[in-house]
Image 1 (cartoon, rainbow, N blue to C red):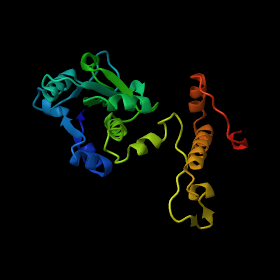
Image 2: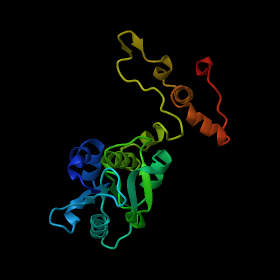
Image 3: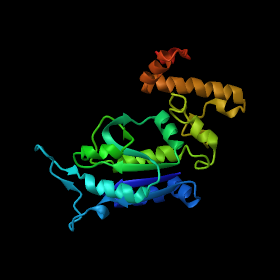
Image 4: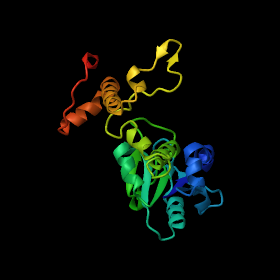
Length: 239
């Protein structure tokens, strides 16, 4: 997959894209991530990419011209799914991440200031937000989206089971995890995880995932119930 990021602040991406999983995925050729500075495409000598909104109001608006020219140069006539990161977009979730991970190419436009000139929407296919709160710009949401999508690309995690078992993959939060030592400061790992009985371990993990979801995100359980799935409480701890 290739992902192009259009931003006014490319320096924000340096550490994130080169480290950990994303760095390894790019080194191995599984993902091609390129960051483009919108200011390089302005038609004025001061590299100005924003201006005051018509009709008045506080703040600045990203201008259409640099964005259009940047998009044209990056795509070069090729097709891609073009996404604007903005608070008014649909809220990112695991289903959307899975949907986008199947695309061959994505272009992410990072909104900033008071947003972008509305005429830019003529070259945008989708709008995505990462939550009901306001950030300084779309750079952090773009990083979140790239990370979320990348781990769903075969080979990136190294184990296909890792992505399938994580929180939200089945509309449930992830079950508790433990590692060595089995006894740490008097806190012991649940015995069931040590007995090697895989069927019982899977049943325990499902029960714990449902419990964790009921305690932290009961709205997810309500959604499952609304979809017609039967959700039974494992024990009194649900109450």
